[in-house]
Length: 263
Image (spheres, rainbow, N blue to C red):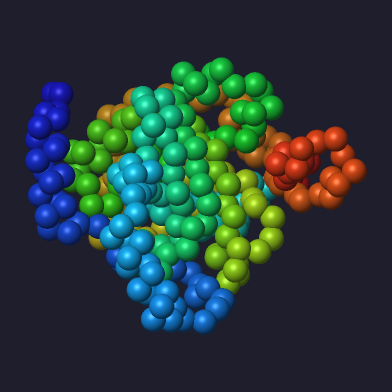
């Protein structure tokens, strides 16, 4: 039976009114530096009241899932995505290490549909990961959304692909955004994720990944482009910063991608 979009909207509004989801996951680290002084607080309050923040208002969806460093699937972390939908085929997300006011921006993710992914060059596809397993396994959740609305959202995301770059590695206890940006990937099979990481998340959000998996069994399994999830085949793309002062390349072309085999 096709779900009523009016029912989805009403249940979502009720959930907002009841304060569902969020504010239950602290940031991994405290940023280096002294506390905000009174002048900073006053300036921030004034800016909040007076300045327009239209781009930020477009980030209307919240997704919680997991990433790992391309080339190192054992280095895993929870990722809180705040998502803006640009059109029917393109989304963009800001990724935080928590969902409270102390959360640090870890990175960004671009999400596109399978229709657009087919148009990408092979080399570009190697930087992207699929979302089918994250959805079908129940690992990916939309905290605070009623079940019917979350299911509808997962139906849209199951066949999409993501390109994710982390810039602040708070999972490594780094108190500043130091080091090279890192390309991230998503899980594709059972047994890959750290079970304790998953259990801790489920407890905080009072959700069951196992139940999510059962509830999403009716979501059709999409065909997956063989060039996505390149890490599974031992083809690793990662970033490094190099000195190109004498190069003809524009400085904004850094960092460059490396192709190396993962053993």
